[in-house]
Amino acid sequence: MTLVPRRRSGAFVLFFWMRGCSVCADLWTNLRRRGLLAQAVRVHRIDVDKRPKVADCYHVVATPTLLAVRNGRVVRRICGYGGSRFASDVNRLFRAVDGSVR
Picture 1 (cartoon, rainbow, N blue to C red):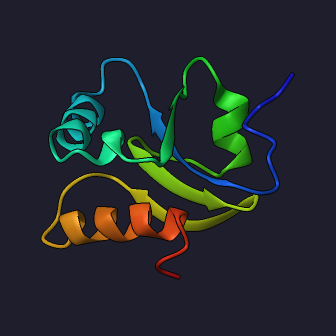
Picture 2: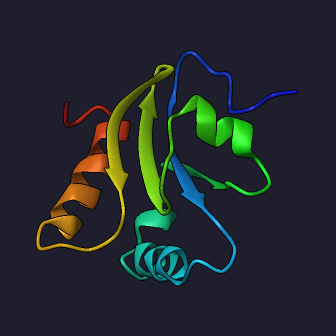
Picture 3: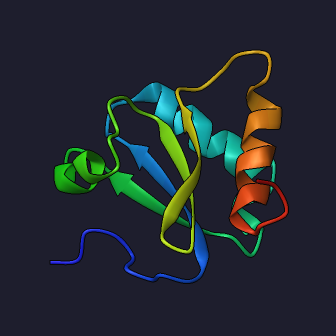
């Protein structure tokens, strides 16, 4: 069973969420509204109730969680939704996927 995309090269974002989580739904809507999901960056949605092994593999303890993965390594992580710096943190996460931010 493949838990996550097994590419050693390439980059993508993992979006960990769960059904019934209104904060997760708000975040997904916000990402779509801001056009981040329309970028060339691949975003994989992972329901933690249906794929708990994947969540454990990435040490996800709360939803929503966003992970930027590049060349098989997590390069940036955001847990939760909100705060004064959230928008800039999300922008940095998506830029980290394409390698423009470390």
